Image 1 (spheres, rainbow, N blue to C red):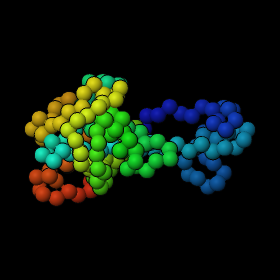
Image 2: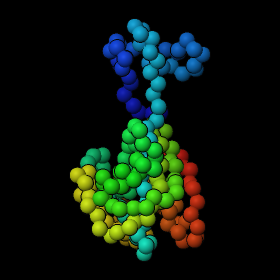
Image 3: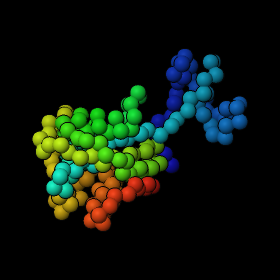
Image 4: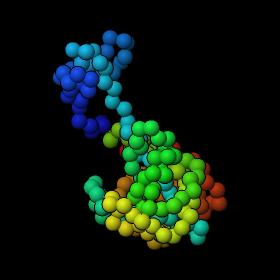
Length: 183
């Protein structure tokens, strides 16, 4: 069951919407404006980020300065914006949250988080410097070896799953692409 506030008013004209099946054969109830007949679709949000790795194998984590999960560690990531690709959004979030200079790598993990209506996409990235300039959303940006990762202090399960796959692939000597359903 996805938790999301229902749409109450039409984004086109402001009239209160009604939830019903559209007249076009759609099989899901949608928010429909009785005045202008606009059908409002609710779709998942994309969260994009990186697994930034330094040459010595350490990964960059950011300590959150915002809710949810203030003070917990995460990979640099956030909501994708309009007019950007997933890779552009991941690079932007890495710069905004960590002030890290990176070279973008391939898509590494795609995580479906149905209960909150989100899809998380993490790219591998090569850090070009050990110097960071965290933005206001980050208390601290720091490099960790696998043994140093504060596993019990990670902000999100998607980050934990991504890091576990990342370090397993690193030990195996080759990186794959991971699709994961997070309950």
